[in-house]
Image 1: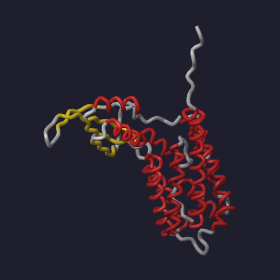
Image 2: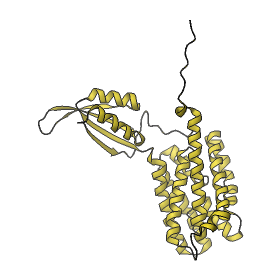
Image 3: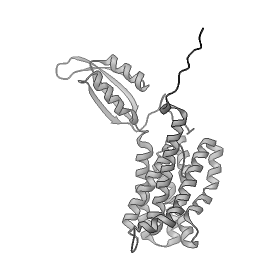
Image 4: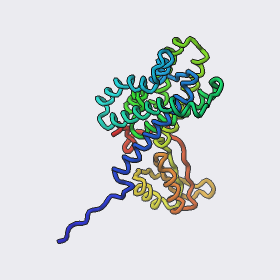
Length: 302
């Protein structure tokens, strides 16, 4: 008998490719996070919570580089992550912290002076808005890649994985506490108010980036080709379905309704093959605040 042929894994589905994409997303997020910090928040002395906010205070008081201060302060949390979440998470978090810290000091020395974003004096509105957006995008990409930007993000991530409490809200709570302390240091309530604006924008953008592709949708499909739709969803998407009896409101003709919970990332593909199977089908998609059950368990990043 001849040797059994081994099935090769396509390159774009291989573990190597998946890890390459994961770390690319993580590094890009760390760079965006670091740049937003020194380009918008540091010049305006805005500290929207987190260890980066404490780093701004240290920089203001001593001139110590923000990036290096951020790196040193993250060491305890870095070791805590190793104990609780394992070496892979630790490696991703370490890469994110190292890249973001290096980006902060590199951009502060060479990039930001040339960009001259605030030529005369800091514009606090622009600083709070764009600072919050850049931080939210950066940390959201890091979170999606299975890592952490360090500091309060690690605590917020642990809260999310263990309880399901919205990641952005957890960040908002922890960072608000730090903002109070920073306000007492600067003794400037105006800076605190702008920092709160930056923190609010940061939390909202972070949720959209980090949770957008993980959000779950409730899909209800009324179709005359129930069996074909059911089979396609189960085989192509790997999702379970429930079949309900329905009745048309005009001619009272019997119909079938396919109901299922599908991650947002699969909605586009689902619409495509349903349109091919039954162009006359009626598809309703709505948001779900929470899904508990097989296929939607929260798991620690690996």
